[in-house]
Length: 228
Length: 228
DNA sequence: TCCGATTCTGGAATGACATTCCAGTCCGTG
DNA sequence: CACGGACTGGAATGTCATTCCAGAATCGGA
Image (cartoon, rainbow over all chains, first blue to last red; front, side):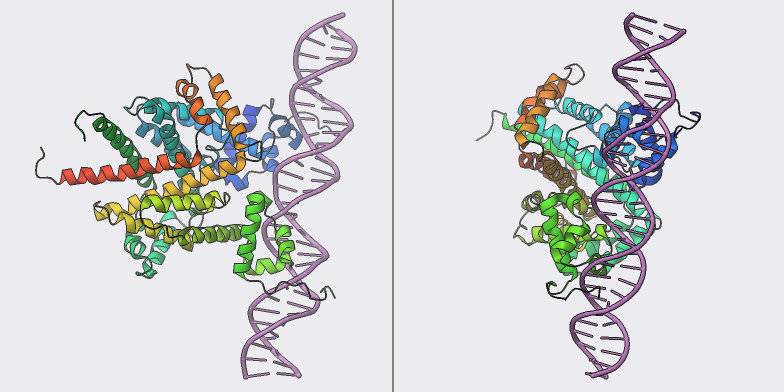
């Protein structure tokens, strides 16, 4: 009679249900806080049941992350590379554990969707077709990698004192550095103190997209008849 | 007499020695393969001794990663943002576990050195001073984040069949996708198959640095007397 | 409706680790 | 050469992921 009276049992388990619960727990406790014990309690089941649906914890987290990516792609953000990238950033800011699992190989379904969307937008530029792949991938890498780093940093910094406090302390350290060894940082301390993470992401994004424009320009003039 | 005849004892432990051994083991076995047990064996000591020098495993890995960053900065790569970024990429490609620990807050000593170098180079552009911080940070984020992702992917992909095999399989999957749902990927499969990771990094870097140039140009013309 | 095969479940082992504790040892100083 | 703090080795602890397996649910066919 190892079986309990089979009552509180949640309807039926499925890969989807497990993934959804994982996202919840991940949001609540972060990646380190997700344990199979917690998950079995939340889903009122046992470890074996979970392992029937997912191969292991990595598989589970990848699945959860791809589900978040699915959400990000659902929003009507499609118009331009700029809005698409920002939609990704904003979504992952709400799920800081997720971004670092997006760029992994092999890519999960929704990561592929993102890359395809980026590629399709890149294909609309005047860049020559043979540059489409590297360019699209570069943008994809930028968006996923930088988002991963910034969001996980935001999550790490938060627990110990408010973000402002942490930044203030860090800025103070920068100011105290030797100006000869760190000429830039000592000057930039103030900027660090009151920078905004999202603005920071946008700055990088604009840099990258401006690069795209310049490369278009270069090619336009390169094909101009009037040249050496 | 829990003490053994005190003979094979390695000279003397220190934070540096522990870090160096950690780098070795990390290179050999990857991040998952580094355990305190292995480390005690390599250093012929006990866990307590290690914990006297490092706070915990995170601390240890951060320390090891910053040591790698130190190496990267030692090479005479300083001339331009381009060569500096490539020096970083090349170094971390040899230590794929390390890059993901560089961008973390609070920044470790050598990460600060890198940011300062980037900032100093940015300060030499014609960008207005108030853009220096965001620009430098954007470049720093790009280099560390993208390197982290690419290098860890390379390390992950390698174990299962050669890189070429993995790419070929992936490319085959892309080709098999529905062309309506994935118009870009189905076309790009061939590019994926024979792309080069380093070229890919360079493509992104060039995009970013071209963006820097375009922003300089914009400002130059913006301050020109002849405008609307 | 009953039956066997297949799909799923719950929970009890198992085995790896990180981390803590502490009894000692080593070494520089006075 | 005795003292105290720096340092060491290794045993003990507790937390997890993962495996195993005895059964329960479910479903298609007879």
